[in-house]
Length: 271
Image 1: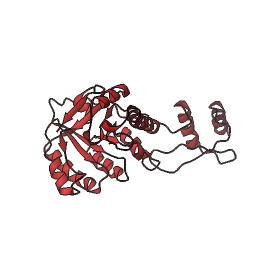
Image 2 (image 1 turned 90 degrees about the vertical axis):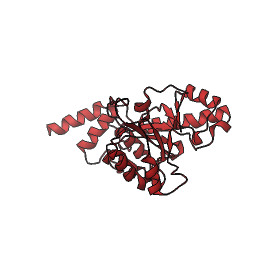
Image 3 (image 1 turned 135 degrees about the vertical axis):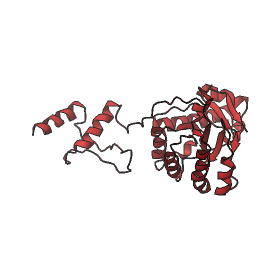
Image 4 (image 1 turned 90 degrees about the horizontal axis):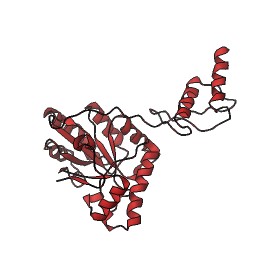
């Protein structure tokens, strides 16, 4: 009885005494629970609610990234695997494979692809130490846009990812690798460095898992490797290419771990 009174007092103190229908999503499940007046009291749900209040409830708690790693890519064979155009319905399989190899990567995402169905993947990326990057809202060639449309492509994607994962991205990859002085200026204003690549697996063109794995296996230390997590053949190739890079004793790093602190507007690496 005393426990019940104590929990009720805490509930009222937290400002949660009124009836609510909102839910706190579980990071590992799509199911939702809500505490409603007249419903059976659930201490675990209450604990989640209280934790959420302490972090700025209403809304789900943001994922927590692992602490920064100290990696010396001058001493190690570093490679930065990058994935464009997601998140898609196969991104979870990509994350599973990366986790099995203890590999971190960088995901350059389209804002329009961050939906109710894929937002959990974005949050998982953060919690597992991957880096998030801006790939525009819907993949236009940025050099052909008006200044207003260019800013909108970047800002909408920045905003939706921050809303979903609590992360303000520092990197972007221009669609098609197409950039110019106006794109440089716009990305500088938005605080985004431009990330190109050293090795293009051409997985977007050649939907052949064996070929994609072979090309990726040719990566050299310091390379940024371009892939796409939306193609089934790339998902199929990923275990094989990681096995090959493991055999060569590569260390998998994010782009920022590879290049250091990125400078907004600056373009890094090009095949």
